[in-house]
Structures are given as C-alpha cells and as structure tokens.
Length: 206
Image (cartoon, rainbow, N blue to C red):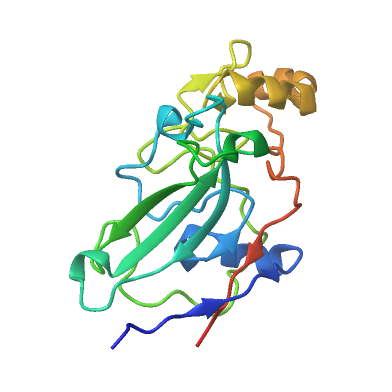
C-alpha cells in the first residue's frame, strides 16, 4: 500500500506580533517566503552551496516544510528547506540550477528545544526581530537569513552571504543606516527576495 500523503495550503500570516511568533524556529513552522527559520545550527548550507549552477547568482529561499519522521528518533524534528534561482532563463532547458533541497533534523532530546510541544499562545511582549546570529555566534546575512561570513567594511556589524546581497542591501537603505550600526544602533533587514511581502504559513490538513 502506498504511504499516506499530507496536503497543505498557503495562508497569509497574521499581521503584527500576534502572528509573527508562529514563524520562529521554536514553533517549527512550515512557511513560504521570508527568511528561513533554521531548525538546528549544524550542517547549514554555506554561500557556495546556495549558488545557482548556471548563473552563479545566490539562490533565494522559497519555502520550508516541517516534516518529522515517525519512528525515527534522530528525526523527531525535521525540516526541509527549498531554495531556487530567481532567473527564469536558468530553467530552460532543465539543468543544474536547482531547486535545491536541504534537510535539517534533530532528536527530541536536544540542546536547542524543549521536549514538550511549543505553546499555543504568543509570548508576552513585542515579537523579537529576526535573529542576526545563531546561538553559536555565526552571523546571518541581513538580506536572506543564510550564513553570512562577509561583513560590511565600514560598520563591521552588517553580515552578508556574498557581494551580491551586500550591494543589494546598500542600495535598499544600508548606506543610510551604516553609521547608526557602527555607533551601536540598528535597522531592520530588507524584505523577501521574491518580492512577495511577508511570509505565509502552510497549515497542514489531512
């Protein structure tokens, strides 16, 4: 007998802090667009792994799906991340451009999350800003939320996955906020690379 199939649909994420908290890593979200909510910190793809095989431009985060494997203790938490090139020309004809699929998984007992299910109610206070660093201290790109080993040469605080996203962020406003970051201030990262606005949740349905 064929294994069961779970279908899902995309629904707009609730505006404001009342809905944004559900898109954080601790809630194990499935979502389309925005920045990846990394499940674990080990084995994350670096900038080279996220470049299109044809145009060599950085791929954009498309979606993530929380897909744990019942009966697999090592995959009690499991999320699939999909990245794709934004250039339509790279898909004609089919070639090495992707999309790219990455898997991130953890056992139930781990150093990051509680063994109990996440709360159903939002935490008190304002929703936190998207993380700029992992718990290990590794920086995340201000544009895409992936590993960002490159930093702004002026403020030394803004991190990027490569020169393309650094130039994009500079044009979209970092040139104005760079001095504030150097002085200890801050500014919000830019939005979705697919120009779709905020993230959308993918609730599961049987």
